[in-house]
Amino acid sequence: MSAEPIEGFTDDPSVFEGMLSVRAVIDAFQSGKSDRRVIRVYFDRERAEKKEKDLKYLREKHKELNFALELTDRGFLDGLCRGTTHGGIAAECTERNYSGEFDGDFMSGGFFVLLDGIEDPYNFGYSLRSLMAAGVTGLVLPPRNWLSAAGTVCRSSAGASELMDIRVADPLEAVRFFKSRGIRIVCSSIKRSVSVYDAVLKTPLLLVIGGEKRGISASVLELADDIVRLDYGSRFRCSLSSASASAVLAFEIARQNNFFR
Image (cartoon, rainbow, N blue to C red; front, side, top):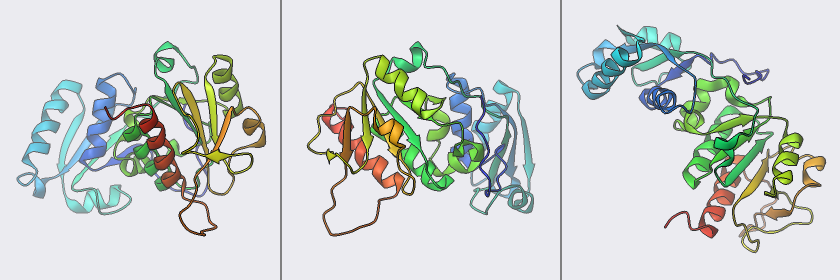
């Protein structure tokens, strides 16, 4: 299954910008986490000496994985990429396929997150970066998600979008599946909630995080075992970004489960 494109955002999902993104695609493919392959890497010839280590790595992988490696100029890269922060490196890659099955490998972890309703690819990418850093073992996304802007998301997530174990499924069906397996469902919302710092959040659990505008659907909230909120230190009436909320919630769960020891 591939990600459904979201209207209103123009991006070439096959182009990955910067060494961090290209390395993430290679690492994810070689570790078996992704079937996305690098087809061709473009390298700014004027940076070959300054980025000798990066070029050496890419030459090794070019031989090992049989992708094309071309030296080019800055103007070509600027035209290929969305911006000018590619650092002289970009890659054309294949599409990645995402399973909708919650198989044994995926379920062997204990900290799962369902992320739904995030409004832009950068916020989405920042959320994935925080979730991976906190120790999330599996990510569930709805079919309509920002992975259709794969290159942008990879860059904003610092490679997390390629390296995480991801499944794509209907949110309600996914929640029902996890609940049927005895896994606790924890939703982030306001009504009938307790502070995340007062809740007992031992894994295994599925944390459900919605976007700032739409939040979590009523049908999913009805299945929650716990509803948690983020209390503020001031009289601020607006929602946090999904990226900020993801970081606070995920790291509190990591703290309660001693992930840092």
